[in-house]
Length: 355
Image (cartoon, rainbow, N blue to C red; front, top):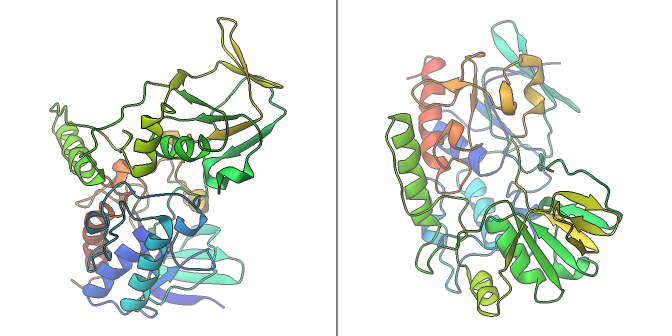
C-alpha cells in the first residue's frame, strides 16, 4: 500500500529539521502535509556518531537553527552532546513528527509525483527535499600501496584510547587538527596535510568564517574577488587545538606518496613507520537514494537552480538542502543551513499551489 503526502523531507538532521520548521511556519502540518524520514534510530542527525571529544568551532549563539537559539555553553565551544541535546529539543519543541528509523533507499518518478521506497516504506509525494548530509559517505583518497596496520576514517573514530601505537592523522582541516590535538596527548603522532594548515588567530571563530564564506560565494557568483580572513577549511583555535599548539604538537608534514605495509613513504626516499592511520579527509554527499532519478552529474553533485539555488534542474519536484556551498553558502553548517531551508520551503509551498 502506498501512503500519499504532499511533501517528504529525507533526513532528520539539522538540514531536514530546519526545512521542516520553515514548512511548518508556512502552514504545512507535520506528520500530515510534510513527513520527515530519518534513517537514524535517535535524534541529532550525524552528531551522535561523531567522536567523543568533538567541539563546535562557533559559540552556541552562532550555532543555532532558525526559530530557537542554542542554549549557552560557558566552558568554551559547545561539545558534541550539547548539540545532540539541542537538536533533540528542537525537534520536540516544534513537534516535527520525525519518523525513525526509516531509511529511504530509492526515489523514483511515479506519475505526477515521486515514489520513495525503503524497508517497509512506500510513500508517494508531490515534492521531496533531500537533506541526508554527508556523514554516511566518508571520502577515502586513493593511496598507492598497502598498509597492514589499523586504518579508519574520522567517521569511525571515537576516542584516542581506541587507537594503536604510533598514529598518523591525515587531513589539515578542523577535524584533522582536533583529532591530532587529542590523540597527541596519549600517543606519538604524525600529522600529514596536503597544504600547510592555516591556524586562525585565537579571536577568529566559526561565526567569522561563516560570514566570510558566505561573502566569498556571493562574490564568486558575481565574478568578483573576495580575499576574506579565512574559509571553512581553516583551523579554528578551540581549546584543545590551542593546547596542542602550545606544546608543539601541531607540526604538519607533506602528504605521503604511498602506503607501505608498515607505514608511509615519500618519493624522496623518506619512510615513516606507523601503526594506525586516521583519515580526516572529509565526506561526499550521501545521494545514492537519488540514483533512479538520474540527477547526479560530474563529481556526484546535483545541478540545482531556482531562486533558492536548491531545486534540481533535472527533476523539478526535488530540492536538496545542506550539502555544501553548491546548494547554499555554508549550508552544511548549523548556522548556515537556515537561509537555504527558508528559501527552499517557500519554493516547495509555492510549487504545491499553497502560497
